[in-house]
Image 1 (cartoon, helix red, strand yellow):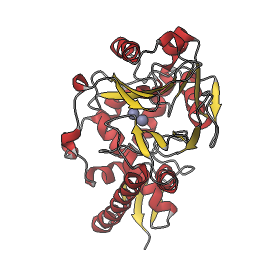
Image 2 (cartoon, helix red, strand yellow):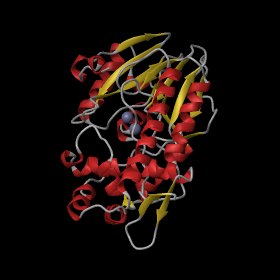
Image 3 (cartoon, helix red, strand yellow):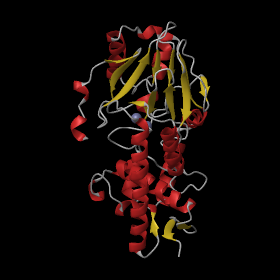
Image 4 (cartoon, protein in one colour):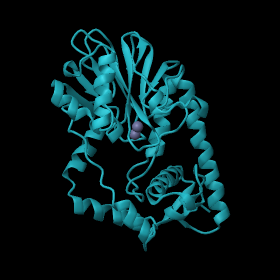
Amino acid sequence: MKSLRRPYSEQRTTDAGGGVWSVPVPIPGNPLGYTLVYAIESPAGPVLIDAGWNHPEAWLALRDGLAAAGMNIGEVRGVVVTHFHPDHAGLAGRVREESGAWIAMHEADIALVRLMRNFEDGAHRDFQADMLRRAGAGAVEVEEVTAHRPQPPALPDRTLHDGDLIDLPGRTLRTVWTPGHTPGHVCLHLRDADRLFTGDHVLPGITPHIGVYPYDRTDVNPLGDFLDSLEKVVALGELEALPAHEWTFPDAAARAAAIRAHHEDKLVRLVALLAEAGEPLTIWETAGRMTWNRPWEELPAMLRGMAAGEAAAHLRALEVREVVRRIAGPDPVRFALHS
Ligand SMILES: [Zn+2]
Ligand SMILES: [Zn+2]
């Protein structure tokens, strides 16, 4: 799989056929490299799927990439944002300023954008620090992780729900709600062409981050949602996948099934790990014993924070399945197998 990965410098605006263009937009300083923004032609102006990271270099890449496809950024009709993350929603506000385009997002992610925009700097930091301590993070890790403050994206002006048709004259583009990676993640099904824009939900070579935040929440089950959302893609049948990163590939359903199996496997290994530990573990301790793409000791604090979120999501899914129990009480929370 790795051999298919090419750096941003080798990416070009591509005619994906059927009135769809793929425009790579760089994510400066991020190993993901780029977001694939898709532009769908329409007589009323192009509609974009995602917009890319909010950075001057990314803006120029989007503008010039659309121009290479014969499109003027000032004529964009709308931007459908697959989810609120900055590599997707970041430039949507700038596109709206330039063209008067609408911005559409699922209601669950709009709620998060509102929350982010209402958070004051100090409050955000305190909230994060508290969450990290309750998961068993060390003092230095708390310090490093809370130093980052994400910039909230523009507030969308159109709200999407599962099944909604996108305002795209002459085409049939349907919203498929696929919560998991974020609560309001959507895929977009271009029904007149048997294609699925998969956002970050289904990617060909990597799997998206699935985390619980705050780590010890019990009112959500993002991994459970994600697995259900993968089933939803499987049920759509064989569709060409146009993902937001990496490269396009022929069968979204087959890849969704493989990702599902990957997580089930990870759950089995987590159960074995808890059995082996012989004592209840904090979320941080659990993350430290799971397998990541680098040894835990070498992970920078920021990535440890994400790994802990991922560990928490798997623990929570096992808790919902009644395989694992949580021991609440004195901080931090711990997890053990049901005896
Ligand atoms: Zn994302
Ligand atoms: Zn992404």
